[in-house]
Length: 300
Ligand SMILES: [Mg+2]
Image 1 (cartoon, helix red, strand yellow):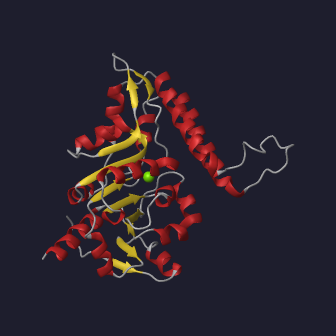
Image 2 (cartoon, protein in one colour):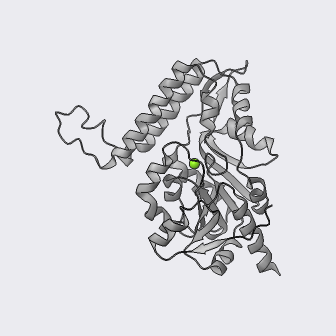
Image 3 (cartoon, rainbow, N blue to C red):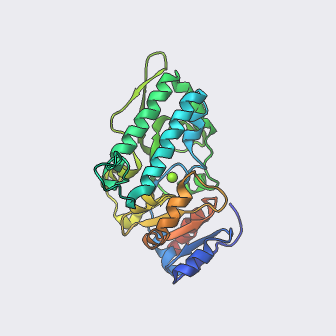
């Protein structure tokens, strides 16, 4: 692990936070004083991790979609663009019944989970049409890179779950390569006897309902909210974080998943107020070190 001192910066105002989160220097940014942050970090016994952009670098979908024919990939990218446009139009009102987009054109959170479920289903149908196999998904998982420090972070947390609007088998192949174990909540693919993709389990996992999996993880492990670390990189992850858990927003300073930055900007302040700390880094190492040092300092 890096021997650089852990830089913990506190802020009072939004302007201070923006300055600390815009100069490209790796640091932990928080409203708490450092000793309170460490005391809270020492309580962590279980962790819930978003996958794409949080535990892993970039998007697992890019590795899967690279394996399908270009025409199918173009269709899939069109779905992504439509979703991003739809979500942006939350406040745009097509308010005339003469407008054929009076319903279709309005981004409304209420229908978000249904749309995300349909989107993932359409993508999987394209993977079926492309003749993809179990081996293809495992190969995609083998190409996904975990962030630096992910292995060290896992070692600090005895109970773990990955909650992702991704694919269970891709995530499993990825973490197996790093010799890591974790419960996973992500959409499960079904394969035929010949290894070909034939479908998926209907209990799909989408961004808007990640909290369902999080609640179940918390209930099954029996720990209190304050014993949980929750980490995510998107506003949807941040919105699902319980009030009293140790909530981490990872904000990488040199890479972005498509579409994330634009959404984040509109919600910057509400995200900031909701999290325990922002990890302004491409690496999970500072967080792993914070947990390690916090546990050490309270046990001696
Ligand atoms: Mg993410």
